[in-house]
Length: 128
Image (cartoon, rainbow, N blue to C red):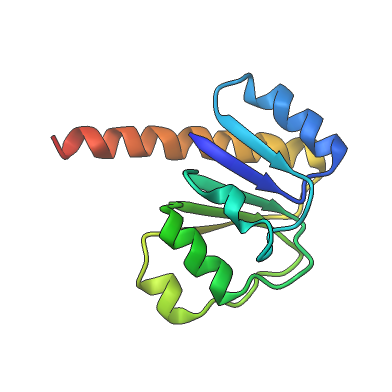
């Protein structure tokens, strides 16, 4: 899978690289996801956000959908509110990961990406 990870700390960046074992193509962005960084998600399968403090706007979500992003994986203290029309009328799936320590969180993200990739492969084979 092609992933872009936003708002990643140096510690999480290192853990992500170790846990990934070069399986997924991950682009690391140290800045939060916003109107000026959303373009990094173009051509990606998934967006991962860790500890996003600022609100994710409808504009950003619409851009991700237009780019063809399938999965929006985020970790925050509280779940953010979504425009119901976006969450129900798009193929973008929202996945919240709980607040856990860094190593467990990163392992959880990689396991999730592995599962999503396998699920996508299985789904594309059944369509043939």
